[in-house]
Structures are given as C-alpha cells and as structure tokens.
Image (cartoon, rainbow, N blue to C red; front, side, top):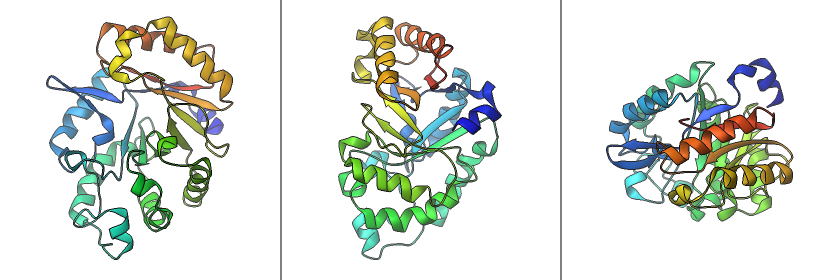
Length: 266
C-alpha cells in the first residue's frame, strides 16, 4: 500500500461512495455485479462519476438474497453445491462482468472487489470453496482490480484465524493490497488496510454530528496501526449532513496520511 501511495500520491485519499440513488431508492455498490442489476450498472457508474469518485467496491459472490444474487457459476449454486460438483462457469455472465470491469484497467480508477458477504456464513466458513474458487477468481480479476476485500463485515461470520488464513491464501495469487471491511478494528495483522464501517447503522447516519464522525475516526486511527478507508457511513449520501461529514473527513485526512479513503460526494 505504501508503495502505491508513493507512486501516485494525488490519487489518495481514495474517493468512493458505497451508496447511490436509484430513482427514489437508496442502493449500494455491493450489488454492482448482481444478476438482476445489469440494467442499473450504467446508472451506478454515472452516479459515481457525478460524485467525483475514483474508487468502487462490489461483491463477486453473494447468495444471501435472490434479488441481489452475485454468482459466476451456471445455475447459481451455493458454496457447498459447488464443492459437490456444480462447478461450471457461466460464460455469458462472466462476459457481462468483463465489460463492467473494464474501467478498472484505467490506472486512475480503483475497482476493489469484495469476495464474500459476511451475512453468508455458509460461504465465509467454507474454506474448501475459498481455495477452489479463489485460485481461479483472483487471477481473472487481477487485470481490473487495484485491491481486494475479503468480506463485508468480516468479523460477523469469520473468526480472526479464518480471516488471517483467507488473506494469506489470496496473497498467493496477487500482489495487490488485501483489506478487511469491518465494523470495528480487530482484524488480522496481515491485512493491508481496514475498510471501516462506522459503529452506527448507515440508515441512521443523519443522527450523528460531524464531531461524532471525526471523534470516531480519530479513535479508529488510535486503535488500528495501518491504513484506513472510511467507507461506510451515511446511507443518505446526497444529503446535507452526509456531505458535511464527508468534507470533515477529507479535511481530517490532510493531517492523517494513514487515511486512504473517504466517502463521497462532498
């Protein structure tokens, strides 16, 4: 991570919005590759551009909800079904992904795939599936990806040892930074960065002041020694309070070089 920052310091802190508006609905970029979401992909990219983002994260395998299903296998098998033999790649789906991932080849665009969903315990605890799937998925994603996250809210369903082992396994196939999305700072030392979810539900983000956000950010930096991307904060991302919070984090980052990402828009 330090080498990447030194090679392109103007890129940092990364600017990303986990949230966007789809009509009157608030949505998240976790679902960028969702099977029902292809019609939204253009709008997501347009929103990210209008916000001034240069980074985006999204899931590559998610079986929690059918409406948000992300699955590159024929028939959308679960992790256990894959290991039972349903291992055929969905070539048509991967072709769609390839088109959607093309922006990641731009050196100024940071696409950061998140491998699994922390609510999907059946997947996050299936080490056999990780080792089968990721030995193919990571090399395939590498041309488009600047970094990786192992899971959303990783500590929700993975032990400290499971997180550490998964990070080590991923690093066998990439030299890109590998981080952890988490609500809390207790993550393994072999993670390169923390993608931090604030302690409050993002739907309640407007209930917290600018000083609440900065105080929590300062506490995170005191308790976590590496780089921090403040990723998940306020679902009402286009609202006035969210923009005030984001601008305060931007200003805070000017004196805190370990802050590598802030929420958008400002």
